[in-house]
Amino acid sequence: MVEVHTKKPLQFKVRAVVTVRNKIKEDFKETMLKHLDAINDSIETRNVVLELISTEIDPKTKSPKKSSKAAGQRNPMSKQRVNYTTEFIVDSNFGVPGAITVTNKHQREFFLESITIEGFFSGAVHFPCKSWVQGERIFFSNKGV
Image (cartoon, rainbow, N blue to C red):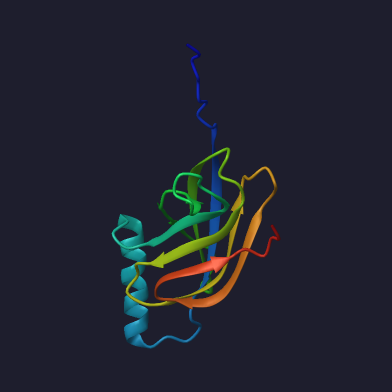
């Protein structure tokens, strides 16, 4: 009888940086919602949630491999921009992310400029979003497969 040992893939950490642009002109209601969203970010009740989608197919499910969902941590840069950062733990056989889902759990929509994922062996993966997000959206990378 031959024993077959299946090796678990190694895991490593990758970091996502999400850049959101604030509205330049806001009315009173928008200003209040922005402050409420900032408070909710700090206590993590509402946030920006990301999920990586690989260019690799999972042989069991026959669909693209997905990371676990991760919530971003708010890092104000200026009056005009806010960064959200988060980390994912992915398997070494995850491949390269070809897409990412972004879920906006805030009270109001925001303008998502870009997302950069750092830590993959193939280099940084950039998602040029340039789009308003309310609810869930999917964006694709600019890196060829």
